[in-house]
Image 1 (spheres, helix red, strand yellow):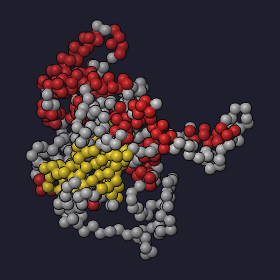
Image 2 (spheres, rainbow, N blue to C red):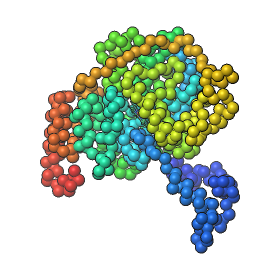
Image 3 (cartoon, helix red, strand yellow):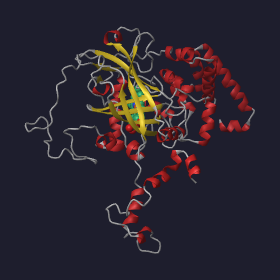
Image 4 (cartoon, helix red, strand yellow):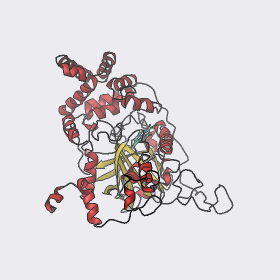
Length: 507
Ligand code: HEM
């Protein structure tokens, strides 16, 4: 028996492990009001208990109301706890307490997610993966929300809803719709760069442990003298960076839609703790205003030679949550949660994110979402009061208006906070340099290129002809060879479909 049990993965033996920890029932069960439940109340058969049985009423009334809205995007995810440890001195760049003092450890919560699918979707779907970290620092919570690819989709936040509508489900068919996807791509080619990363092997990391993470924006940093720098953070996996090919994705997904979730849980449970190096690419405030590209444009990479990379520390995940809903579903990561020394990136997307996350979390979790356990900072002294629970101690009898003369909390004076601000002017011009560089230089070998092309082809074969033709033309403008190869692939695939009646129906 023991040999058999020991062969089970930790995720499969969770219930048994609980029993090993608690060999006897953990106590007498109660109603929600705490009344001990008599065994006769656990059934309503042949009784008049339907409305007089509190246990039954609690049971039904609670379970039918146990859903909260899933996240608007990044709905499917998993999470873990761990710590961040400083390994290098970065005081020259930032005074942030969390990043200063070699050896200092800060507790963290992390949520890893898939971008477009619903809860219950496929971990390995070729979509953006999310990598959100909440550092519980001495100066408040610092949230970094990154993706597994180093660039974002667009620079104008008015595209948020249209992009995710086009890439999610068609309002009539409730199916993902490649015509809608290519339609928005041809009308807004700025999307191509980030989407190229996703169409390639980079779009299917081998689980969450083996992917990198990128918060993407250029954050303003400041040190204790008020000197400013700009930095893009990178989380580099220490498990060995690894992607899956589309064929591997198809095989694994046929057996397990929760592949990445399971992989993370099992490895943490087996004490094979996943870790990432946290580093930053830095430019001085002088350099950043003198490069020949817009370094605040979230859709493009910084050019080689314009920045240097600085190591900061290590992120280690060493604890699975005891309760998924409490620790992961109720978590609210907000890029606006920053700390002194790590200041707001000046780009428009970041500004819009300050609004969007707060608003969606008020809707999804309520106005007091930052008071929910997993979101609560170490230290909180605020004038905000009341509202839908949790309110925790609601600041007890502390004066509830500011300013006041009666010892309520007061602001501190941040002498070294930079006074200058950078203003970023964005351009609407269509620029295909980034996707073309991706195809030419980032896809480093022929195998990667061919798989990228195959993925483009399979997304294009079900697209209606007028949109497909424009998509192919756009790819040709990006790179003549790319456009030609994808066109040949689509033509061959369409010919095959014509000869195969089942394929006609399917596509
Ligand atoms: C650089 C650009 C962006 C990055 C790196 C990013 C990353 C992420 C990540 C990692 C999550 C999942 C958070 C979690 O695990 O709970 C997320 C969720 C979300 N994102 Fe973004 N995102 C970006 C841009 C945007 C923009 C432009 C908007 C809207 C204007 C937006 C709106 C949202 C919303 C509404 C959620 C759901 C949050 C929740 O319900 O808690 N994101 N994003």
